[in-house]
Image (cartoon, rainbow, N blue to C red; front, top):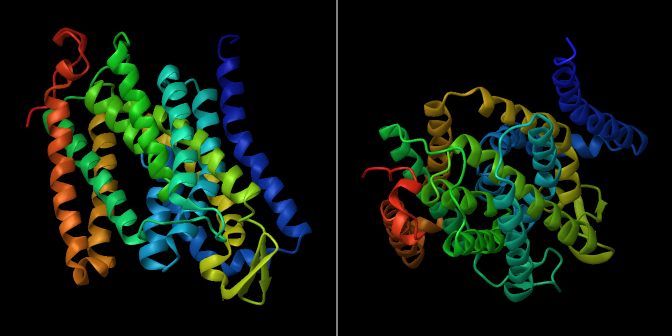
Length: 374
């Protein structure tokens, strides 16, 4: 009876956290008379029902749903969708990360520390090297359509390799082998590159860390997914603070259904459905604080084959939606060429890395699980 008490307390704490956040949200919405604003952004709430579950159960983050839906379906500018994704993940994925730790789920702490730190460095480097902080939403000099396609290519590569793992029943190990210099370099590079991607799309550290930790290092996806969720929670929190709070993108002034100022600076009026980041964020909070923890629960209960099929399926949906909704692919030959060549290179690269990971990581063959057959 005594030994069961910590488990009971852990379960109570697991659901008390989203409950407390929901009560705080209700207090703010009622006290601040924000119901009309929340209702205005019902599309954000609907989007994040699915996005939050994905955030807690896959290495793709809520941004993997929010970014494509916002940019392709709702026609929200890419830089606005990026900041929304980071801000809502700072709520949902942080909640999921805390519950993962409270529930005692297995993660690789060293991978989180190394990749998370490198991811935050890459995030800040991308913001200041590629971004324009003088614009209302810290826009990037890179064309948004190329950002969208690159995001899709990365997820397609992940879908390919995890599908191979499912097909062959090769799920990996639950503990990484000894870290050598190349292992350290791999985590630093994947984290830094993921941070750059996160600055552009709101997601990336989770995807690239998962690719490295599962494809190269051979970690079991059941450990790789929560590890990537916790690492992305750190980067999302940084993005929320830098872009949402300090840059002031959550400080939105409305005139009716039009956004007229950001951080106190007037902008040309634009529809709130596309530019009111605070309203979009506020409407999604009570969804993600329950959906992301539910995702972590689902992943814990899934069989290995279903888990991997779900991860691969979510990535496949992103690829298909890009082909359907991104009209520029049908009108811009250069973009279409970039997509086709990039997809071929990405898939062939992850296949090569998977097949030759023992040599790449300078590990003895017995130190890593067998590569996924082609």
